Amino acid sequence: MARKTGSHSEITGPRVRDAAERLFARHGFAAVSMRQIAGEVGVQAGALYLYTKDKQALLFDLMDAHMVALLEAWENADPDGAPLIRLEALVRFHIRFHMERQEAVFIAYMELRNLTSDNYSAITERRKAYEKVFEDILTDGKASGAFAVEDAHLSAMAVIAMLTGVNTWYREGGRLSLERVEEVYWDMVRKSLAC
Image 1: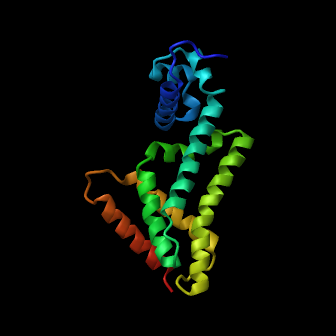
Image 2 (image 1 turned 45 degrees about the vertical axis):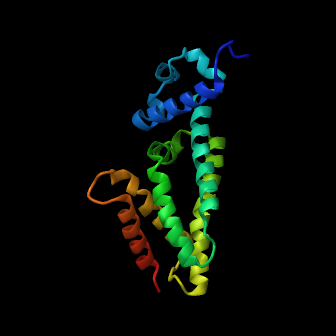
Image 3 (image 1 turned 60 degrees about the vertical axis):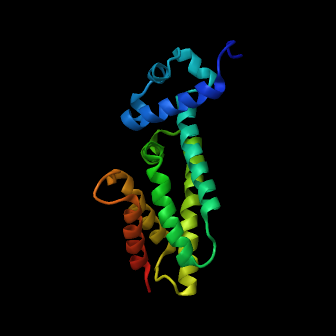
């Protein structure tokens, strides 16, 4: 189906995704209709299908884009080097990256249950790739004697859960700056893995 003359896919497409992300994060995927998304964007409901196949495809695209951005951003931020240096960088990166994308993070964690089986598998693979970053650093740290971990995978999952929890309580302008939160969390992670 061709777009109507005068439509602007480079403007409307991102607006559709932004509105869907906002609404899914606020009300939940199941409670949001394509008509609501269209209303937020200011287009007719039928016009949304110029930008997405359906609501499921929109949810998958949001989650996939988040995971791709996360993996690419870490690849660019990874300092390489010793496991302790890499883990500190990863802890700080994880907190900062996720704080800047709270709605996307909420959807990525809370809406997995609403993905079709194939979409769930694809997102789960991306999540495993990110979890493996933590696990590999912990494995290297254990091998070098920098970390005392019994099970690198379990430890990686515990660290990720702890770090992602910052999104649920941190508010800008509160008692602690985000930089201070990063320092405290890094200290807790380091001490929990220390030999």
